[in-house]
Length: 241
Length: 247
Image (cartoon, rainbow over all chains, first blue to last red; front, top):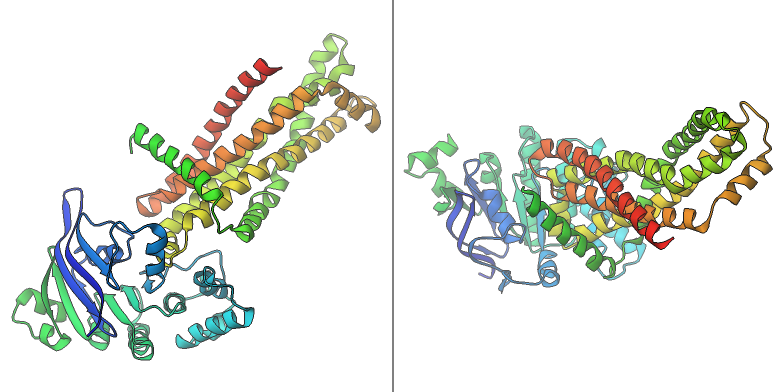
């Protein structure tokens, strides 16, 4: 299987707090990898390192075969356009409407005719079932709608990898299930690889092809959802009870 | 953050501004939007302050001049005071309060809600889009506001002069323009660019580098105003020294 991202011996500390100790990870094309772990175990730091938002202390990160360490901003930005990132808060731009939020990542692409841009925006919103919200401002949207628009904005560049930072946090169970289903649909439709950081076991069950558990900065366990949920380790099982 | 560390970061932040300013892509639409928000939306506040400044300055100065039988000097004295010093400084302080706090708080909350990170991971240059456009807008809008504010202040002075006397509009402004030299107007105008630049840069710096979540938003807004206002006085002091050496 084709590897789209690889992390080797990743270490990151904040002062005396050693968040990531020795993380080794591969993510294959078209695969959904769910990362579970306690709050503060460095799950978000891991994916922020992957897109160069946080600089690791040690270790190497390869995106599409290229080591991102020492890459110039221009080159890194080219790689970043192939990676979508859905933030925990959706991170919609408050001063822009939903349409402008979705058009924003398209600005650096070759000048597209208005109709083509509109078609891309509509397609992205149709994917998340929110065409009707196109002219709304983020402040007019509910938490679930914001997440969906955030996902639509992430998808508009048709990324090959999508990083989801707690996509269902703060949502009711029904909306959480809808978002989880959307993640699965996007994987099937675009054959994207995803890393999904979550505490939501239902989300993990729906979306995961592979699950890893992070504890004290290392990968404690790895396997399918079924294998991990039936682990003999009491600490790991406690996630599923 | 220590004082020297902060000064170092601010210096780097300033150099980055000039580096990014001349590099494409140019965010013209965002610059125009910011100019509208920063300039046009601040105009009513500057206009009201200006009118009151002109009225008060004239009413307060009249008794002193009257003691020396120099009431006819009122237009000249008020215009020189306003155009040379009071107008630029007071409007810049008002600007630091309104615009500086707004930029500081807006950027800090963008940071807290990961909007700046979101721009960065989508391969955009958030510094260019957010910081360069705002600093450029504050630099260019404050001088315009000061010109308009000065004009309204002088009109306020004209109203105040006529509260206890009778001077025609034509005569009043004839005296005003007669009393103003190039050396009064030009340095005062030039320093407002520096005021605007400092206010924009400091508030962007505080907002862009804010920490500690929502608490940081308040701190960024507050320090943007405090340091922005302080920078106005420091630049003013330097400008006065340079002007007095040149003229």
